[in-house]
Image 1: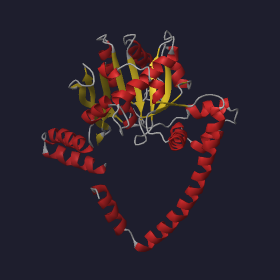
Image 2 (image 1 turned 90 degrees about the horizontal axis):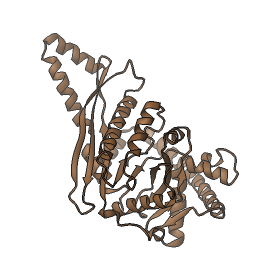
Image 3 (image 1 turned 90 degrees about the vertical axis):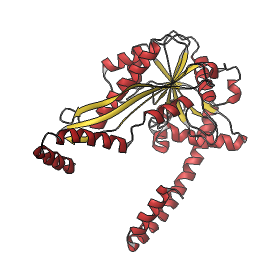
Image 4 (image 1 turned 30 degrees about the vertical axis):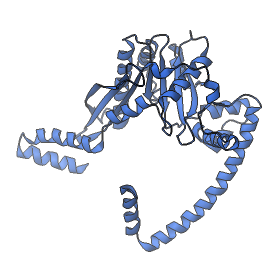
Length: 366
């Protein structure tokens, strides 16, 4: 039993006994309702898969990647960033951040180089920003885009994995930022690949496409499955059971056509997505593969991107190794951010006893 489990048990035991009895009874009732709902969704997913398969092929396997290149020999990069907001002093919050690139310059069997592209502390005034965390996230993503632009300036044929979608932030429509990010993407050498690895998928692009293909009412599938990843959890699991299959699965590519993706398209960047699962022990992730309008065979390019992801992802893991390492190296942990914040406060307290008292009171107010 790990520490988190022990903590849960302790907090459970501290809860009033009568309250627990009522909560457990309610949990049993909710569990029965969930079981019935899950059976209904499972039945609908089987019907849906059959209907879609009559129209087009939905799921592909490792055998469909038999003509792949040896992407383990390619120069490969992982880019990720992290931030943590702390504060505040008055209306000013602080956001320690870091952006890291992991470089496998000679391929998979090369010793990775940890390149801390940027690290620092951003000041954010909450009077000027409705959401401090959202603004910190946008600043970090701008830094990640600069890291990508800087790498592409080297003009090296490579595979670049980024942690998150190509359209990032997903709901952020700022024309100047979109143009800058698109230019950073397009500046890569012709043969290079950029692959966005999306672990938390809250979109419904495929569901809406399937509603059109099957001529269903708008939101009919969205109301049942909510997000694309939920649908493919049913599809992939059933496929594995029916075919006794434990290797790579991925979907057909879909060009994204929502409002923000169309803005990227206006700047010459088309974005194709597939859902990918390394094996039955791995989570399902979405891969975003951007490409320009000059790419003649997008299916081949998507297939190569899937092959590269497959080769760089260990069995049982969810995302490629360069992203795994970049994620761990860049991570700003809460405890570290608090220590940095306390160091800022220490410098303030050194100016006088009255300042120290005021800062302590402001800090406690938060």
